[in-house]
Length: 460
View 1 (cartoon, helix red, strand yellow):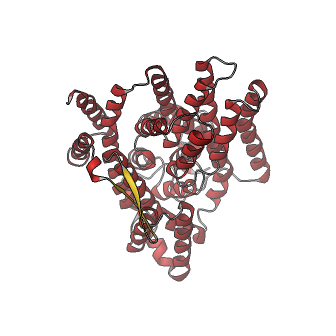
View 2 (cartoon, one colour):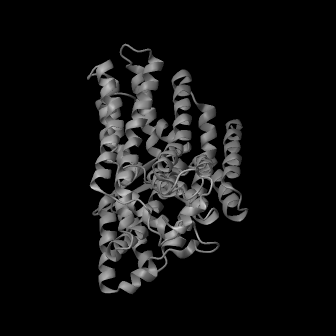
View 3 (cartoon, helix red, strand yellow):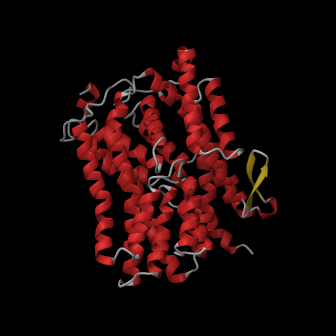
């Protein structure tokens, strides 16, 4: 156990770096600010955990993020689980990961019910029409912050730009971008090791007191095959037992069993964030299973983009509508609730399993220079990935129609200028002023922009 781990004098549990109740309060506060997709969510944790509270060092934070970027599923939630595990062990990871998705799950569950009841969410849509532009400003700030701390050498700037171009201009699959970035980092280390060590430090958040979890401290958990087997067994039971129970009580052909199996599968292929898999989800949910219409899929995506938590939470909206319309022997509302909760469960439980299985091993690899160099390359590419997500979000917030244009190897998604949303453009400008000029806190910006969205209802 490190010296920093002895500071938790009132936590009541050996190995806690900070008191557990203090950690719970912090994760609850973070959970209320998880707007803006991965960029905004990572930025919130960066600001709170690395800069303000000084609970974890910058390099340690980046190392955890790099590992999470390699996994299927929402990387921001997995990062929360990882850091929660570092701070308070297994229970810390469980609380951090659960709180990270809980506000968004409850908000989207309520909005799904509103949609079913009224089929007209004009007031809610206006509210989100104000929030979405605010999120753009927050994401822009996040990209700048992450870039400032990660791109500490021209080489890493080049990797970030190349990653952005590969995704935005050439439609290169995300795993390929990450693999190439890791290879570049490894090759550079072999040729000029001092360059990687100098550039990959990420010390931008090093001002102030030393973090409780330093960049050099080794986590006390010792990986072993026996421990991994226990975690794997417990994780698989937790993941699949609800699906098996639903199959027994509602039948193997019920909508609930189908949703449990389908979304368990998508949880394993969501590399590159939610956008990478949503096209597949939309195709299957609309065309194959007829759980909802194409227009409803778009509305669900808009709701998920404007509520806290991972964007992949849109699958809950899909399952809610599908189960409501085909509840079998159940009441439609009971069926909708069961479908939504089961889908949320099988989507996010694998995230805990991946972290608890892999984190002890990844911790032991932090001082492996070659692996560290590969992960440094990934860190630089992450900036380009987040910037690409920010661009996608901006296009779909400020314009009603975007189209993909192909010129040889180029595959560029461009907005139709005539479909610009003037209200969203004005609110975005106001949000940028509040963020960069006035430096208002995030929640105040969100509140003001939400009010502007409601006011837009009164416009002719």
